[in-house]
Image (tube, rainbow, N blue to C red; front, top):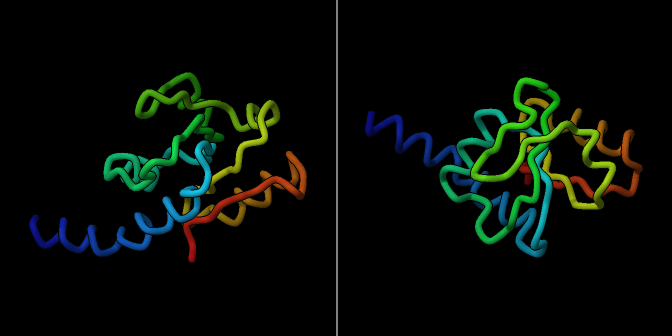
Length: 115
């Protein structure tokens, strides 16, 4: 178990470094994705001082829930704000970025966990 925890910590190091870097200069962001990666980043404090104003997810089962006291909303809720959106997924990060820009304009800022 200790080995697993150590390996997980090593694997998450770039994520913990990237999340604050992606949002460190921003006081407020939206996070698209509430899966295991997001849960792990929230639990480990990876967002640092960056405040997540809302989480969005395409899975309707999560809508209306809260994560760390922050509401989980439908992605359409991004239409009423101009927050930068952190695509919090390795597997779907590019698809999320395309969806954000397609639905909310090419100029919409999308942050990525990838370096």
